[in-house]
Amino acid sequence: QMQLAESGGGLVQAGGSLRLSCAASGPTFSAHAMGWFRRAPGKEREFVSAISWNGDNKYYADSVKGRFTISRDNAKDTVYLQMNSLKPEDTAEYYCAADTSAYYSTSLSNSPMAYDYWGQGTQVTVPS
Picture 1 (cartoon, rainbow, N blue to C red):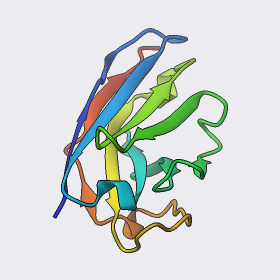
Picture 2 (cartoon, rainbow, N blue to C red):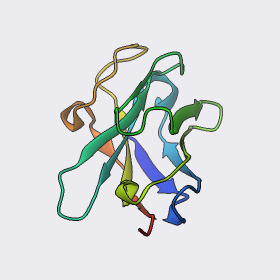
Picture 3 (cartoon, one colour):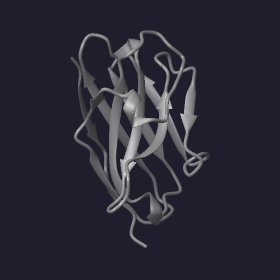
Picture 4 (spheres, one colour):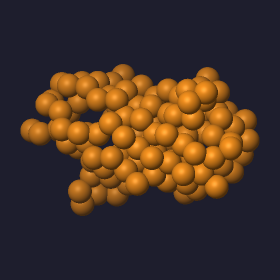
């Protein structure tokens, strides 16, 4: 079992930055890939980024590449999403998720179906 709790969302002007955090509880966080997804009003859930268990592999959606950075601190059971140069189209509820199907795998997925634990989400709003 794993529980995930996101924090760090808020309202920020276009061009600004936010750092999201996702704190995990559970004995195996450090063994699993983690991902960030988002859902904008009226839209489907969208992949944002993923990171392997050791942080060596990272994967980004084209829409955020070069602006967002995913990282993790296994000693703190936390994964982060640093978001820079924010745009109004980044407005969404952001969710972190854990893929516990494999241990110590470097394979990363952009499909929400690959992730079996989800947080409650944190809202990011970038006014136009």
